[in-house]
Length: 186
Image (cartoon, rainbow, N blue to C red; front, side, top):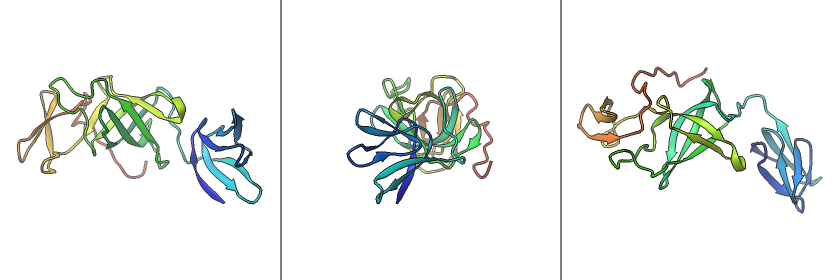
């Protein structure tokens, strides 16, 4: 048996490979998850099922998520979700956001890998979590200088390194620098 985590609506297998078991449904020749849970493949019986998990908090449309930017490919960002509505999650969810224009007011990059950000879930289309950063309280809540790794301070909607004086543009949350997060437990 093999297992991994699936979101509702996510494709798991085709009906040529397996038969749908509990926690799944068949649509157009594909077996999809009907709930958030652990996918379990039974290779002897050729059945796939989804077992409900209680530990994972599935983000819903409208939820506020906190996580870190793990990729910035072109005009898109990918974030690894750590908190959903202030509740810690270890599910390993990734969210994506298409940045219109991909650049800030001065042409700078709005996010960099490693930035801690707050976003709102706007869609769960195609089993992907889509987030948005448009509200003033959304955006980067903590970052460091990407030149030298030291602390930065907010200066006119940008961040400036206290050591090397490098200035970088970011989409900062209105409470940037005032957020007190505990990234352990919760």
